Image (cartoon, rainbow, N blue to C red; front, side, top):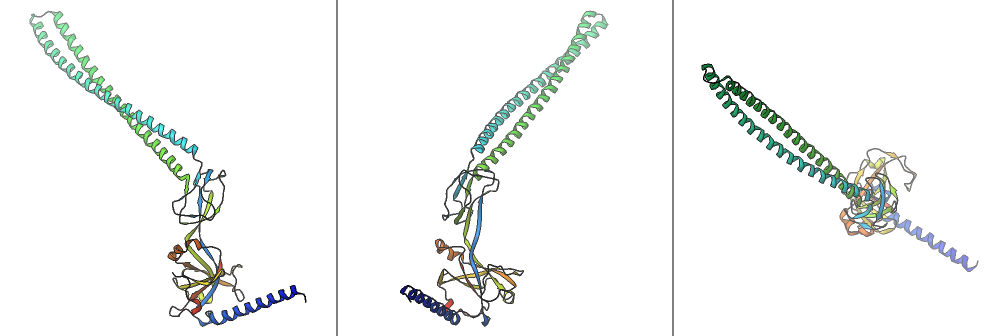
Length: 357
C-alpha cells in the first residue's frame, strides 16, 4: 500500500471515530424524547421578508443600498424618476394661483355690483320722492284748473310730470333688480373660483404625495436581501424594487407529530441549536402552533421514517437578543429545536443557554 492510500485510510478511520464519538455524546447527553418532557424538530432559521415596492409605475432612478446593507426604518433606499410628476405639480400650482386670482376678481366684481345696488336703491328713493311731489303738485293744479284759475296747459304739463316721475321709479326698480342679479352672478363666480381652487389644490396635494412616494424608504429595521431591479429599469405599479429581511422577527419553523402537538402550549420554552454553531444554545419561545395538520414537507428531515401528518410550529427568538447580535443574524441556517413539553422539567446540562437572552 502506497503512502497516499495509507493517509486516506487514516483520515477515513478518524472520521468514523469522530462520528461514533458524536453519536455516543448525542445518545447520552441529549434530552430523551421518550422521557415525555422534551421533543425535538428539525427546521431552518427564517425571518419576515418585506418587499419594498413602487406604488406607481415608472423608471427606477437610483438604488441607494446594496445587498447585505443594514437599514433603519424610514431610511431612503431608492428613488423613482419623478420628473414628469414634478412638472405636473408645477402646472397644478400655477393653476391654483390662477384660480385664486380669478376669485379676487370675482370678489371685486361682487363689491362693484353691490355698490350698483345701493346706488339704484338711492335713485329709487329719490324718484319716489319726486313722484310724490309731482302727484301733490298735479292735484293742486287740477283743483285750480277746475276753478278756472289754472290753464289746461298747466294741468296737462303737471299730469305729464307725474307720469314721467312714475316711469323714473319703474326704471329705478328695474335697475335694482338688474344690479341684484349681477351681484348673484358675481357671487356665483366667487363660488366657482373657490371650487376651482379646491380642485387644483387637491390635484397638487395628490402630486406632492406621488413625489414623496417616489422616494422609497425602509419599512422596518432590517437587512437588504435582494436588489430585485437595477437603476434604469421600468417597473409597474406595485413593482418590487428591494427585498428586506425584518431582523426583529426571526424564528425557526419546525414540525411535530400529532402525538405531541396537542401538548404544545404557546410561549413554551424552546432551545435552538444551529448546525453551523453547535456550541451555542439559543433561547426561543413558541409563538405559533398550526391548528390543522399537514403532510410532512419533503424538505423536513427526521431521524426516523417520516410521519404522515405533522403540525407546523414556530419558535420566535427574543427580540432583545436579536438586537444585541443583529449583525450575526443569518436566515436559512438549519438546526434543531428542542421544545420543553413539561413546564416543571429542568433543562439538561447539554441544553444550558450559551447565548444570554
